[in-house]
Amino acid sequence: MEESFKREVPIGFVDYVQVGERKPVIISQKLREEFYNTFNELESMILERYVPEATPSSRKCNKCEFKKFCEYGESSVPS
Image 1 (spheres, rainbow, N blue to C red):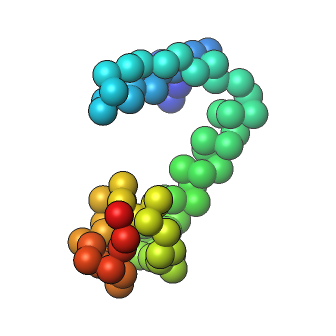
Image 2 (cartoon, one colour):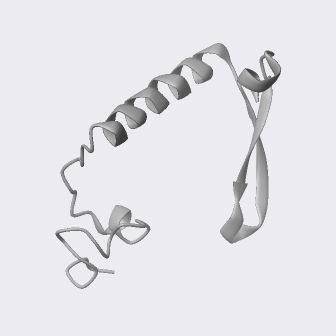
Image 3 (tube, one colour):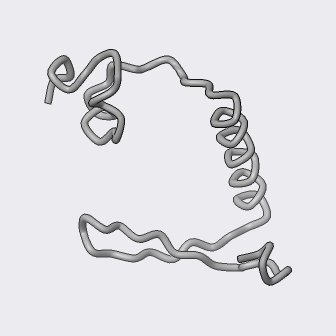
């Protein structure tokens, strides 16, 4: 939105779809910078087709969209 309207956005919202909640987030300059840094890192990873090393953590794996394609696979991750 900031790029489209050429204005800083002071507040955003995070939707927690599974629990049906929406929480406001104050967008500080620090948060904005962290977002753009993370976005640029992810964009580079995608463009370079870089895949980070998998982490066999059941806490992370159980919610991961890619667990079906991961070297650890669905069946090797404890619930």
